[in-house]
Amino acid sequence: GAVVSQHPSWVICKSGTSVKIECRSLDFQATTMFWYRQFPKQSLMLMATSNEGSKATYEQGVEKDKFLINHASLTLSTLTVTSAHPEDSSFYICSARAPRDLSYEQYFGPGTRLTVT
Amino acid sequence: GENVGLHLPTLSVQEGDNSIINCAYSNSASDYFIWYKQESGKGPQFIIDIRSNMDKRQGQRVTVLLNKTVKHLSLQIAATQPGDSAVYFCAGSKGSYKLIFGSGTRLLVRP
Image 1: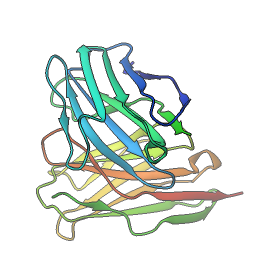
Image 2: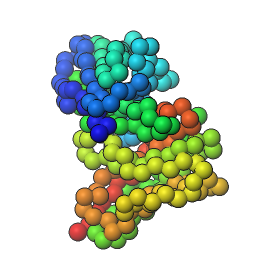
Image 3: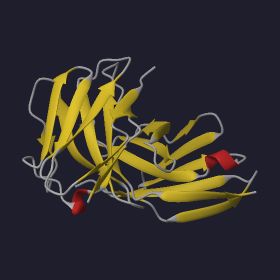
């Protein structure tokens, strides 16, 4: 159990276009999902926390108008990279928290490799 | 803010030996720590966790040690196998469910 999927697994887009990445919890309901960005040979950096039915909370330095997050249901959160530029090329990873007991555990998706040309 | 970091970027061990991966944190308010394993091109995989009211926790072939006095966390892998080769991250939280990741250590297992 506790499987998180992402779609697409990789995407190439042209500079100036927008790209949407989906994060789904397949076998549990996730009230909270997280979006991370990871550059090559670096650690995961939290971009935003997404709560179902409310606005996402963005980390300092992350542009909320550029990285649009929608958490429309308990099993789906989307990240849209608007007006993408080559510097947005990165590995985007989502995670979901299963609200059981007091567990802090997050279940991670397989990631989405974004390349902006 | 919270800061979780690692000492060594790369650790090379002989297959069958034990591995010890270290992590330091600066925020004494952190109350929950997790070790993750990440293989190339994949998302992090949960290994083991520990709460701040514990100093040791054991899993299958893995042990996490927490020393709150010196703000140090370690992951011990017994009888390291080729499949253990990956990047290992520690992550910490201070009650907000938000995890802050360390910089990562690459574990290389020599045959």
